[in-house]
Image 1 (tube, rainbow, N blue to C red):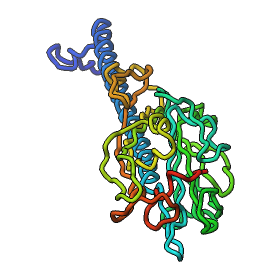
Image 2: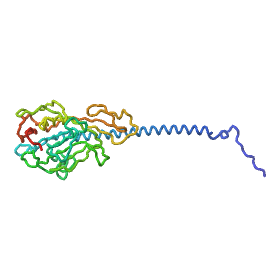
Image 3: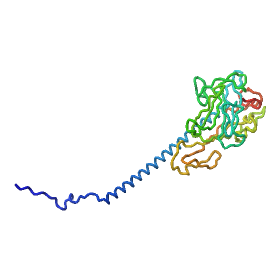
Image 4: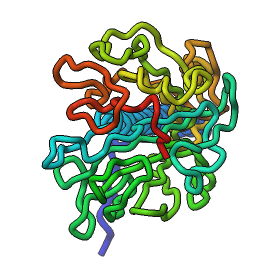
Length: 333
C-alpha cells in the first residue's frame, strides 16, 4: 500500500515567511530595553531622594516649631504667681536670667549666681532660666504634683528670696543647647528643671537644634512710685543686660527667640542652593554637606512680667499684682 503524498504549504503562505530575530535585532532590542530601564531607575532614584529630602525638611520644620512652642510657653509663664490670703504674691523673686554662650554650670549655681560662659557677645548658643509658680493648670502632672520641663514632679520649697508666705511649688527651668550623649552627640534643645530643693540633671528635649539666640525686649528703667513702663524701647542681648546689673532684668517685657534647626539624616548629592540659609543674625550661611538648616524666629511677650493694671513700682517686696516690686533690692537667689 502506497503512502499518501505529504502536503506542502504554498510558498506564498504566511507561515512560510516566519523567521526568528537576527543577532543585530536582538542586540538593538536589548540596548533599547536597558536604556528604558536605566531611565526608569534614574527617575525612581531622583523621586526617592526628593521624597526623602521633603520628609527630612518637614521633620526639621516640625522639630523647630515644637521647640519654639515650648520656649514661648515658658516665657509667657515667667513670673506667674497666685496671691496669698494677705493679697501678697506667693512668689515675688526674680523670674528671668540669661547668658550669651550658655551657662558654665546649669544645676549647681543658685539662680542669682548663674555663671555665663561669656561676659560679652558670643557666637555660641544662648541659655536662659525661667521661674514661676507651677500648678496643675499651667504645668503637666507628675505623681500628683505639677511637673518641671522634663516631666518630673516639683516638691514645694522655699526660695531664699521669697517672702514669708512659706513653701511654693516654684518651677525653675533652665534651657540651653547641648550635645545628646545618647544620640550620637546630636545638638539638642536641653532643659534642666528643679524638682524642689535640687535638680535631677539635664535632659534633651528636641534633637537637631543647632543654635538658640535670644534678644530681650526691654522697657525704660522703672521708677519707684511711677507706673511700671510697658513700652518696649530696645532689644538687647543677655550680656548687655547682665552688664547693667541684676535689676536691669526688671525691664524685660518679652523676647525675640531664634532657633537654627538641621535635618536629621545625611542626604547625598544635596544641591548647594538647598544647603544655603540665613542665621539668626541674617548672615548668609551654608550647611554642612548633605544637610539642610533653617532659622526659625518667634517674638513673645512675657505677660506675667507686667501688672495686669497700671500699677506703681515699689521698692518693697510682696506688694500684690506687681512681679517686679522689690526687685531692685532683693538678693534673687
